[in-house]
Length: 341
Image 1 (cartoon, rainbow, N blue to C red):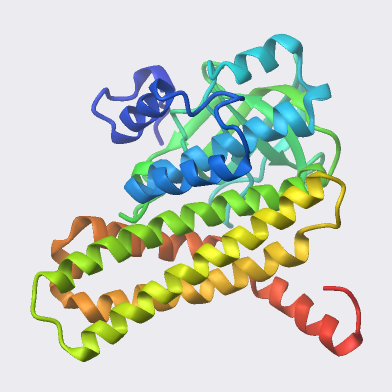
Image 2: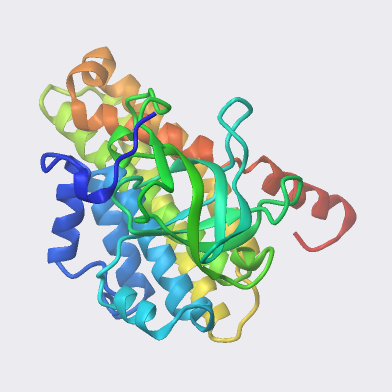
């Protein structure tokens, strides 16, 4: 295990350099975008250059919306001002550790107020972020669904295991195992399940789907370059056309889900069903793109094209992190019973 805070990260760290570029471009502030569509386009564009950076950017934007729009009453005015001005790097950490990775994070009481102790996994941006919304338990056997805002800068309270994440895909996102030891809680955000409230949770899902779309954009761009560099036959062109059609399907579903989320924020019906359908379809279409890209570029493309390999492998990890089997089961059950999905 090794502890690494933001101010000790190497200056050559690609995530840190990319983050400072986003800050310089004004993409981290509370009012960075005129509307949700512009924000999604930015998340997609960042992910199209680096899935790892896009994943951390996505988490920051999720946290900004939660703290400034969803639960502003839980956060002090000075804290909200710092968030709005992008003086803080933020994230949302929800994944529990697997058996053997430590005890899950639990809310407790320290001499200065509430604290958390225990572990969280897949903590994207670990070592870069200043604060994170962390899903914790009130008791060791309670549900891990209470959102709290945690200060990651308190010395000696956050330990990052840089050896836990051994894969190469998304390695630059620093999605490591983090163990808390009395890390100070700055705010409790509502109660158990607050982070799952709609339309906010659908907005989170929409942003993560925009990250997926950015990875698809990279794959399409690299595959076109490979095909254009040779004399393509009809079979190559047909497969390339199918890849482009899948990308167009991604665009269509993102637009439909965006409309549903915006309507919900304006007082319309819940967007949950539309967003769930989008993510199920995107998962299928993106996996088809990943497979077709491998067939079109061959083994040489997979081992000699760093951009293509990073996008394919990164998307594979991201899609597996979002298990949608239960979502499909609910829709199937609704068809059988006549209930609402």
